[in-house]
Length: 208
Image (cartoon, rainbow, N blue to C red; front, side, top):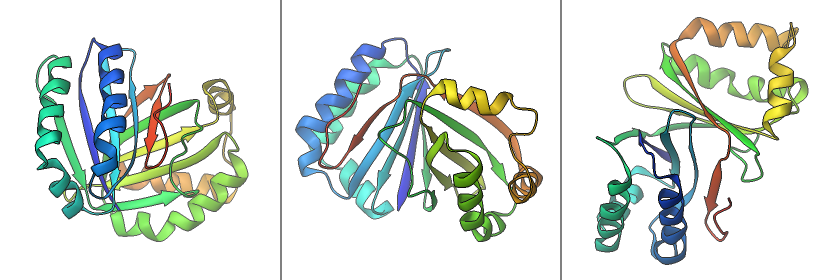
């Protein structure tokens, strides 16, 4: 899997949402290797899109379609200033990946010193998270060549996520050990909260 992260300042959320719906209706049927996407806008007007493709080659071929170029010309008018694109070939799935049923999504960005160590622990992390955090229903971790990572975590809803976060010891035993290991190899971490995320997947409709 290949993931592209799109990020930029946006104060026109309704237009951005309408254009992502338009893409799903008009461009998705002919898209190349597109699997789905998670989208949202933070409280400080930062748009985040986490888009999944079968491969980098498919994503690049898709971006070269004339209709894709025309659509993006419309889309970029909704942003204030430059838009960032981050490409990640190294992708890990937790609990099968994200979930279009999520009521709240948190996008965590940072740098990881040892991607191989993280990859080796991913199955254990998935198992303990499934057991200790029922509010988490899926996640993807996308790592760029320079070690920058984007973790997209899908929660049942924000109230449950905050409830678990507020506990003095949200993780115990093996879960706590794995979280400490994760903290040891990551740094410069920031959080982007998508309170009203929307989703698109091949064969489905975008959800508000």
